[in-house]
Amino acid sequence: MNNAFNIVIAGVGGQGLITLTQILAEAALSEGYDVKTSELHGIAQRGGSIETYIKFGKKVYSPLVDPGKADLIISLELQEGLRKIGFSNPKTIFVVNDSFIPYHGGLEEEEVKGKLSTLLKKRLHLVPASLVCKKELDNEVVSGIYLLGFCVFRNLIPLKPESVLKAIEKNVPAKHLEINRQSCHLAKNG
Figure (cartoon, rainbow, N blue to C red):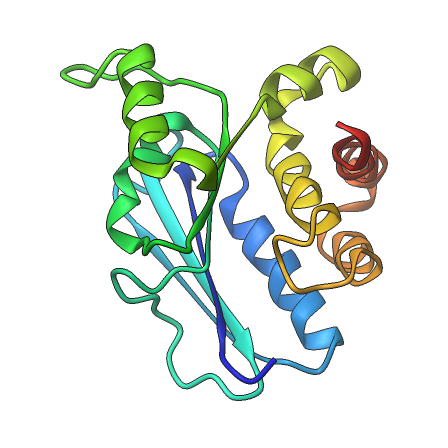
């Protein structure tokens, strides 16, 4: 890969965005890529809006993803996905968790889904990650890892699944490792 691959990860505090970024960076480094990451916090507390950037490729000069330059946007929540439209171009793929966190003055869930569907059409993957993780693992906190597995096993990210699984092992505490592995593998078949 000669050009950098640009990813924006969006969500709210407490959803594990920093961990996802670390896992992706570790996997890309293990495959020999130059990697840059950055995190931008809105209200960087539990429930506050957060976005992280990761770029990897032969040579990467800046960690920031410019508007219109994202190759992939992973959003752990519907409204956060809609907020990242400005990073997209006609080829940007969106992988969005079908999870809605209402806030005062925000749109209704169906309005958000409608706007995403209208704007993105076939580039949108609306994934029930929280629902699947809650049902199968009794823990929706690992839904970010599920989304990562969804992306990797469908070749939406140019990294090998083995590299991502090894990076999960290196970045997730031992007491949470097995449930994160299970979440990633669930996405392979989901």
